[in-house]
Length: 339
Ligand code: PEP
Ligand code: MN
Image (cartoon, rainbow, N blue to C red; front, side, top):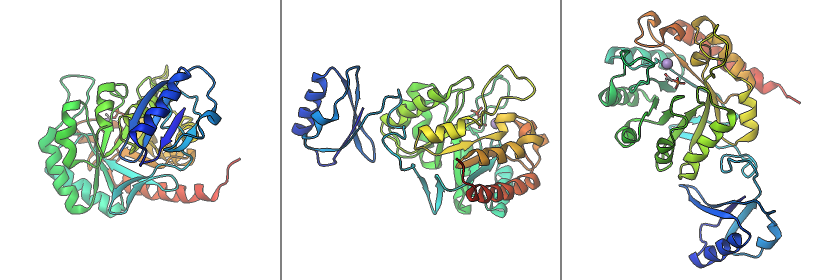
């Protein structure tokens, strides 16, 4: 159960309400975000809304039986829009394109990518400066200095930045240089990291865990929301299955299911999803048709020379073509009416 509180509720009114909820055996968690105040009640007894109608300070009461609550569509039918400033959004009814290298490598590379994005009308650049690598001997990223340089060049060009944060101590030092914190697939259930990202007033994109279920992804988002941050984006990036012909299995089922269960925007990452360059475009377009609000993919001037994930990275000509086709496919999707 979620009780949305009025912003002017007094402490006395709140205490009365909490006492009443406790009296029916419910455990209460108070949530204060940058946008609203909520009481989350967890309990077994049937919750009779009529017993709470006369309490003061309540905006609305919603019965949400799922384990995740604040990210559920059951209480908030209006989709959450992520406003990155300067007219850049990630939201339902829109198609965000985020492209860039797997890893940020050098000043020259950043400039090349930015020129390509500008020429292709892409407003958000992806790239890793802290890289989670399966091997400790692989390139681990340029770190904070790389991010500062990237931010300076991106800002001059009016490009937004999405990049991975790997640990709690990086959140603060990255703050001034990112537009979206990315939580990688290996960190989806790093609950300390999620808790801390709840305290930040900046967008967070959570990737689905490598072996994570849809429910677990929503629960991870719930951590950030209940920590105070409502600016959340969900990302389907493929899961580990028995299939070995592709790097991962891009679970496009997750897109309409997440959109139906949650008010948060959903982004698809076809690069990690299939892991094979020549098939990234079709999976990107399939993601658009599945209902995604955005596509994030890897692009590099010379993918063969990329420090990481070159095998799934598009060159600039391929990326320019894909961006155009994503927009066309999205326009086509809008003409369809399903069910
Ligand atoms: C990435 O975006 O480069 C990345 C490491 O993604 P994931 O966490 O999905 O593997
Ligand atoms: Mn990558």
